[in-house]
Each structure stands twice: as C-alpha cells, then as structure tokens.
Length: 330
Image (cartoon, rainbow, N blue to C red):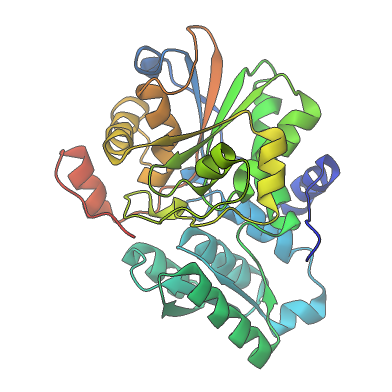
C-alpha cells in the first residue's frame, strides 16, 4: 500500500514564498451586514478575487514551481471539475509549460472556455472520477507528463494552506474558520497551518449533502464511498475521501457538516445581496451551514468563511438571485 503523504507547517511557509510573485493576496473582509443572518462576527476570505477566480491557483503554482526544468518541458496534466484545471492552464501560460486538462463532459462552459483560452489542451471525458484518472494515466504513459493532482499532492495542499497564513496575519484573534470540502486538499492545508500555529481555533468543513463522503466517513469511523448525487455545488463532488487528505482531516478538522441544495442556494443569494460578492454555489456552503444554524456559534465570535471561487455561468447565477430553478450537476 502506498505510504500516506502529509503536509507540514514548513511546507506551507515555503509555498507562501514560492507562489508570492504569481498569486493575489486576497483581502479579509469584515461583513457586518451578515452578522444578523449568521449569528456571529462575520469575516470572508474571497478567493473568487484570485487571479483565476478560485483558490486553486495557489496549489497549482506551489506544485508547478517545485518541478524541475525537464519536468516543465515535458508538460503537466490534471483532471479537474474546472477551477483546478483553469489554475494549471494559467500557470502553464505564464511559465511556458504545456498543459493538458481532463474535465467532466458536463463541466460549466465558462470553466472549459477559460482553460482553452489560456492555451490548455482540454479533453472532455467521463463524469466518473475513476474514468477520468484512467485517461490521465494513459496520457502520462504516452507523453511523460507530470501529474498535478488537485488534492492528493502535499505541494498542492501547501499552496492552499497559504490562505490560513494570510487570514491569521490579518486576524490573529480568529475563533473559527469554515471551509468548503470537496476532495479535501484545501482544508488539509488550512487545518494543518491553523492547528500548528493556533490550535484553539476551530476548523469546520462543509460538504454538499449527497456528496458528503468525508461526513459519512467520519460517522462510520473509516473511509466510505458516498453516492455523488446531482448538486449545484459541482466543484465539491467527491465520491470517496482522498487517501492523503483523509488522515489530515481526521486529525485537524473539528467538525464536518453537510448542507442541502436549498440551503446552498439561499446562501449564494445572501452573499451577493449583503457582501456584494459573486460566489459560485460551491463557495457558499459554509455560509449555508451558518444560516441553517448547523454550526454552533455565538454573537461576537470571530468566524472566517473561506469563499473558494466564483467561476460559474453568469446566467445560472442570475437564476439563483431571482429564485428560479437551476440545474444540478452529477
């Protein structure tokens, strides 16, 4: 069995230095208008303001900047529901590295078009995770690409962990941080940094109900698969916990919570109304959990909601804002 790989505080600190010239240091916004809705002192970390519209650029740059010149010349490959693929495409364009991205065939057009516009070879493939990664390994065997995995790679996790570094620099007195969970790389990096620097801070992970393999695995006390039912939070689909993130999450994350489709839609609208921030539904699950009183928080508690991304078809977001039906993605 392959040895599990973790991420360390030092990895995250080194990643911060490595990626600093290439990523945007997003602000930490105090959103007083949301306090009454969420029942706490609300702060948001809007990663939709990142250069590629999502936090994924941090992890992608962290990994790619650690590659040798020979590896860069051969090119990189990944599979992604969209945001990680865009991040790799941007990094490839910036650094002159060939990039191939395998995406589900029903990925939102915006994400596909953005990756192609940045020069990536985008291959539309099966929605099933296993099928897409079979295709990745076929391409690696044929071309010698280096895999940049969206959540299993410790260097990617380290890049995502730089979000926590920035949050604590801006708000050392933070009480709780709430993080969307898909594959688990983001919360692995964030929780590692938080628990290494200030372990009293609560780390809470949120998944979409029906795609909540981490929630179900914690309940079962072991890794279990969960059915990937259709969801508007398409960026969080994950049938099975990641091999490397799972033990990190079990060690560092205080709570894992799932939210319903209706709760996610309400949160997406609230965020636009009150914070004037356009988040895709995947980014809004933390706000959804607080709105639905699924997180035990109190007035005056300083809570940071990590808003992961904003790459969604604008017409579909318009439907959410107007309380119209929107299609879920499997």
